[in-house]
Image (tube, rainbow, N blue to C red; front, side, top):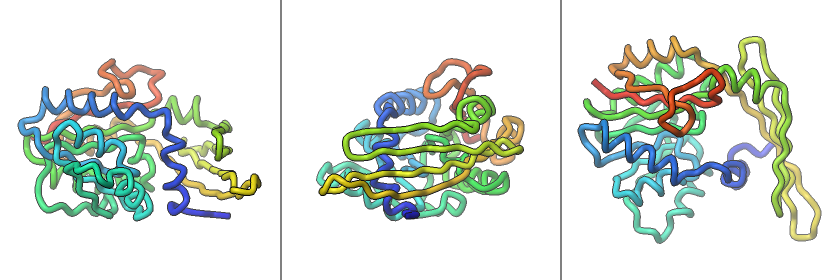
Length: 248
């Protein structure tokens, strides 16, 4: 049974249970305080179920969370219900971003840009981010590396298991180093039986030279490329590169 985002939103937090959103929020907060000219409004692009939006709002930022999935945004609204945090959620495609005004920092994490279809879409996304990030503002995002696609994802398979859900994850590595990912979820029903749901998507690889060129064309100055969610320099075995840029 193919379930799309309606069911995937329910499984998303379980799949990303190992993500330290407190660490990421602390990192983003530190970068904003150090490098941004203004420090009030943050755009959480491809915000998913709103975990990072919540953490950033708790640090005092006005947060705009944008995602193209209504199911993800429904989950985000439920997560923040009753918490009285300054977060606004918008359903939009990140390549067609339209905001009410400029933001001081744009954040896009967990390889969301790798889910785009081609270089033209990444270029278009950068154009929209540049349009709505104020001069002196930051752009913080991550991308998968060639090492991760070839050595970690590759043609490998993974299993995730918890009390009420089992996930079988299988990959196919293509000649262009994109990775097609197949997910099968088995959710435990009240009667003890399991219902299967399936989904698949592709993560493509962007060369560093192209990313740097696209950033420069859209008025972003590179501050640094870091290893995962740290401020350690990127290395050959980095699985994720954190790009930190400033709108000039």
